[in-house]
Image (cartoon, rainbow, N blue to C red; front, side, top):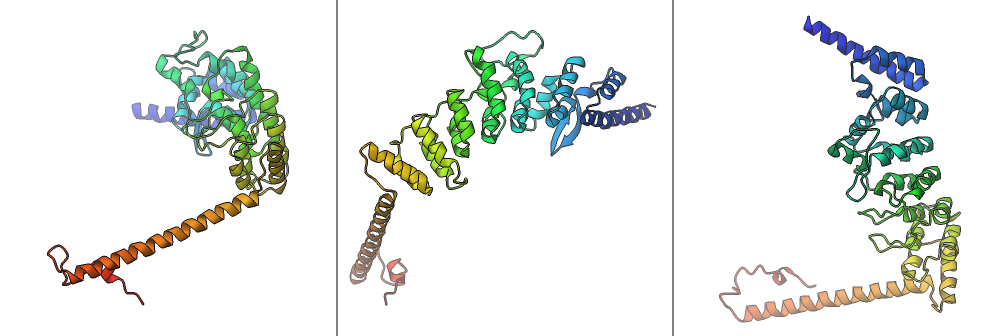
Length: 353
C-alpha cells in the first residue's frame, strides 16, 4: 500500500515538472496557477523541474534561463517561489542568478533582481536588515557567492558588450556609498587584475569604452597582473580583432581618457601590427620628445638575441675545451679519484672529427 502511494506521488511529481516546464515556456499564467494550487503541501515549485544545456533548474531558474521576466516575477510574488533555493541549486553548479542575468543580458530581470540582491547582501562592513526575507547568516553568503569562473557577473556583461546591464547597475548604485564586488565596475579580478575598463579594451569595444568613461567614470589607469595597462591590452587585441575601430579606440584612450602613451611604449609598439596605430604612437611619442620607430626596437631586440646566441655558443666551446683538457690531465696522472681504466666520463664519450 505504501509502495503504491509512493509511486503515485512520484508520477504526480513527474507530471508537475513536465507541465510546469511547458507552461513557463508558453507563458501560460493560468496553467502555472492551476499546477501550483493542485500541488499544495508539496515543495515541488522550488525543486528541480528540468535540465537546460546541462544546467539543472527549478521553476524560477527555468524562467530566469528563458529570460521571462513576467513569469519570474509571477512565481516570486504570487506563489512565493524561493529565490534562495534557486540560488542554492545554481551555486552547486558553479553559477548564480546574477551570472545568468549578466551572461544573457537580461536588463529587465536585472532591474527587478538588484534590490532583492542588495537587500540580502551581507558583509562585515555593510550589513543591512532583512525585512522581506528571513535568511540565516550561512545561507545569506550565497548572495555574495562568486562562481568558479574568473570574471564577476558585471565583468561578464562587460565582456559580452551588454551596456544595458552596466547601465542598470551603475544607475542603481548611484544612491549608495558602496557596491558589492560582483557588481563593482572598477573591481579588479584577483587572478588577472582586470576590471571592466581593461576588459572593454581587451574586446576592442569602442561603445563600451566610451560608455565606461563618459557615464561610469571607470578606471582606465588600472594595471593588470602582467603590468599591462589599457594601451598594451588594446595593442595586443589588435592582432586578434578586426582592425576596423581599434584605431578609434586607441586615439580615444590617449586623447580623451588621457591614458599615458609613455607607459611601456616599446611594449605597446611591439604588441601591435596595426600600421595606423603604430604610426599614431610613434608621432605621439615624437611630440613628447621621444624619437623611436617600431622597426628600430625590433632590430635592437634581434641584435641582442644574436649577441646572446653567440655568447652562449662561445661558452659551450670553452666549457667543452676545459672538459677535454681536464680529461687529458686525468689520463696522464692516474689516481684513485679518477681511475683510468673503463673511463666513461662525459668527455670520453665525445669524438671530435
